[in-house]
Amino acid sequence: MPKKNPQNSKPVITIAEVAKAAGVSIPTVSRILNNKEYVAEETRDRVNQAIQQLGYVPHIQARQLRGAASRTLALHHPIESPHDLSSVIETSYFTGTAEAASEKEYFINFLVSQLTPEALVNMYRSNQIDGIILLQVRIDDWRVNLLRENNYPFVMIGRCADLESLSFIDLDFEKAMLLAFDHLVELGHRSIGFLTYPESWNKAGIGPAVRSLDGYKQALNKHDLSGCYREIGLTSVEEGFEATNDLLQENPDLTAIITVSHLTAAGSIKALVQHGRSVPQDCSVMTIGFGGNFANVVTPSLTTLEWSPYEISYQAALLMTDRLANEQLPAQQILVPPKLIVRESTKEVN
Image (tube, rainbow, N blue to C red):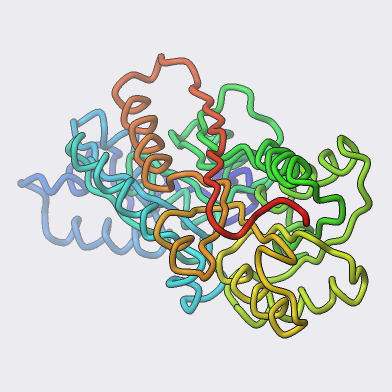
């Protein structure tokens, strides 16, 4: 009876079932799978037909016993639409992963589509990949659950809820929110707005959205402040513009705004200017995210709490290759603190 995998997808077909369906021995099927000689063409055709009909995929462990590791890693970012490629995904995630993989003599596949449980398992069983690096990890992530249950090697850029024996490198979003408020409160700000990740991200349990909002609530409690925030998209100046207008209607006395995207920060500055308020003289604006050149493009240049996606993805790839080189290594869990870069967009309250 074919075994079911943990995600209730299609049955996992074994080599024994192929042999039975084709009316041959298991060694004969093995010889055909390995392209060995001295097998009758009629037998080979019958076995191949059984393989096709049953949907059999060779298991990775069997291939590895023959020294056939693929030397290939995958980086999976499950975006909703190809149009998000230029705006949501940081190119540095790709370059950092590729650089580390190349140094360790691995190939790298970039996966930017939604995967099914069956497709993910088959990538391992068909020896397409040796390990995978997961981006945009959810608090309860089916990919993590599936890979853990099957004992397939993987590393997360992000964190789920249950981290026992799992390797990850993640950004400390909670600390970033606390540091952002510390900076603004030290400058005298008491009325601070927040433009955060989309509501759909928070409902889906996507890590950055959940952890940023948790950090925001901690910061409000720490400094005894009232909340004023909007959950919006990340990829549009217009969304930042409209959300800032909403914040100003709710609280006209805002003196500072924190965003999680440089595009929404640009929209926020645009809205403030239209309300006759200059940045930073009348209202400070700062961003939590990936700064560098992006922060300097905006006028005035943005004060940021930032990380290097290149360094993070580079380290994630090394975690993955280290695990593949030595399965006995203990789990590596790295939480990266943000770095405060003060630029022109924040100043003391007048």
